[in-house]
Length: 74
Image (cartoon, rainbow, N blue to C red; front, side):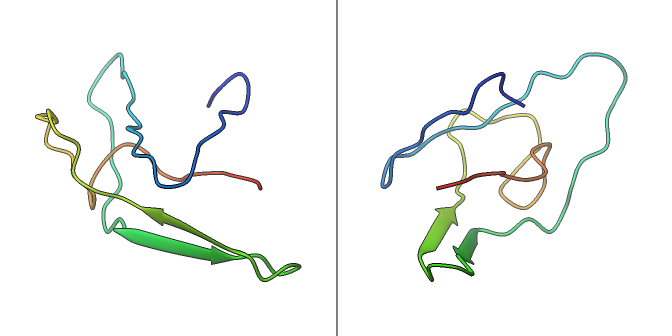
């Protein structure tokens, strides 16, 4: 969670990462490479595309990892 919302721009790549402290943690599986959300009120579509992060060497991937969800508003 961020203290303040973070603005992201279309067609720009971003990397989401987490620093975990303490014992081993659980992780999610069956992540999706592409998620399209259609606004129920305006019909506008927002698409998130997830890809491999260069330099990632901790066993996570697009399908398996520590970031459970993206919460956004437009």
